[in-house]
Image (tube, rainbow, N blue to C red; front, side, top):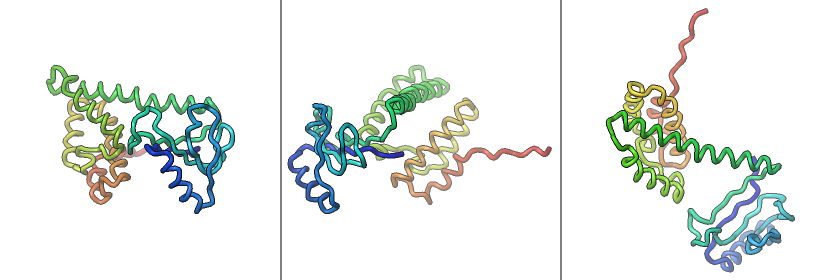
Amino acid sequence: MTLSHICLGTNDPPRTERFYDALLATLGHSRCAGAEDTQSQAWRGWIVYRGARSEELTLWLCRPFDGQAATAGNGTMVAFRARSWSEVERFHAAALAHGGNHLVTLVNEAMDRLRDAGVVHPERVLGPLLRASLENVLAHGDVALTGPVARGDAGTIARHVAALRAVAPDSVPAYLALARRTADRAIASGRLRPRDAEPLLGVLAPPAVEEVPA
């Protein structure tokens, strides 16, 4: 996997440009020409950029596309290098599938489990929680992780798994996979220490497969 460029949002382009001019000059990098399209003409970049593509990883500064203030969650962009537009289209389709289609499945699974618990209108229960969670993760990334997995609460997760096995066994593999991925992200982001995660990862480990003698 190769990165093409990194873009940082700024609220004060002239001041930020002076800062990076001085900083990157110590590494031998000077300002590069921008792309020809109108939107990118206001960008300021360093390192090597030629025509419509960067020849090596490039740093860009610009005001956020949405016209709002640059913040930790607005204005930052990381671009991957693709060998063709068909690769870009496949990348885009995969992102939509994981971010959209899978989210629909997850929400429907959650509503089904609430119905199993006797909740008549699960959408009323989930709506506020989902909206708050989505806003938080879009603004803060992994900092938005909360709940028993992020805390390393193996006992609570074990009870969840036991309840699912009794009521909805088909949901158990998806629950375990998502919980393991959540634990991985919590560990990687420093929200869960590996030592504290050990009991949790034991609960989330796939069941051992018994070998049948030939």
